[in-house]
Length: 119
Image (tube, rainbow, N blue to C red):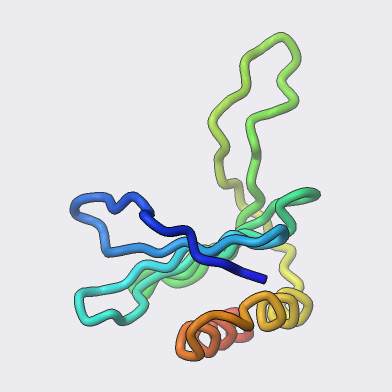
């Protein structure tokens, strides 16, 4: 079940953000000054084939795989990066998100679930 990380570093000039995690998901949500959601990133399947669905109010959707920077023989680990990945099972992810988000605010659950389904 998703639980919130307290004391998330806020970056000056960016919208306020909150961070929620469990074994399968990482969820970052960005809020405007009136506490409306302006963006989110839902990373999923963290232990096997980590991917991220990102949505921004002014830019729309991205779906990426996360290259963790490992697997470079003879070299140091690189910084993880996002790389385009078109495969997204929105039904499975939406169902898993609803189960994992049981303790979150209903408004957040509804918003994120609708955005997942609309992708």
